[in-house]
Image 1 (spheres, rainbow, N blue to C red):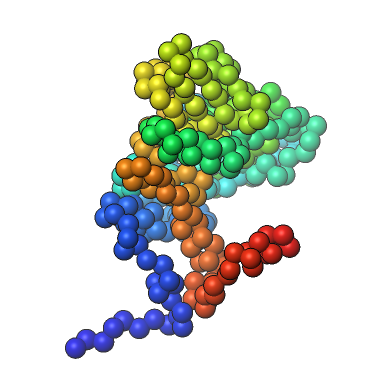
Image 2 (cartoon, rainbow, N blue to C red):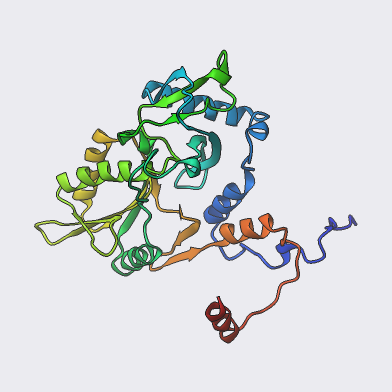
Length: 318
């Protein structure tokens, strides 16, 4: 008989993590989101044709929207750096949708009062996410997820900001050239505020009311007593409620103003995996936790059982 495959880890994580009780469709979804390696540098990304195509697609979009113009590098202005961020998008059934590369400005080098004035990041509160999941499970609502493509390009840039030439896309005399930004870009301090201001105007014009407890939540009560909720986390959106007609109208009206992508039924949001049964919704942070263990080289460590009392003491100490 063939011997079992040996592992160099004394306590392999496979002994403690199992997906046997999950449906085959959800097992397929979990295996897909764990299978693709995300590059951490442009040198690593340039070795894979999929990431090269993703970067070329991002550059084409930025150039098509006239995000910047190449000018002589000013001597009296600070030039902000930039870098590439990579991620993978999945369809609602867990299959691969596309490789996505995003050019991000190094906004942490900006100076308040010179490169930007006011900032605000449209980040949904986790308590709000839990409440929407709870309402959806209780009332049996349908919950869908949407993504706005290049959402920050919809915001206007009021300040004069210069950026270095994107890595991997050099020009002649690159040392003397810079990008003068005409529109906001991911990573800039003022980008989230500019985009969210534009989106808020659109939602108010459609008859939605902005929540005072969480400004990223928009609510609309229909005349027939039905409810529609939309929650925004930067450029990702969750739409929930019992008014199917209003939800369809909302998709069409938003698509007319922004380039949106329907990701289907909510499956993965903010590191939370969402699974459904006939009567319940199950949430898990399995991938998020495994990624943390992998990043800290703890996948092969010995596990221990922590009681509820110990867990409360740990949280209070923190």
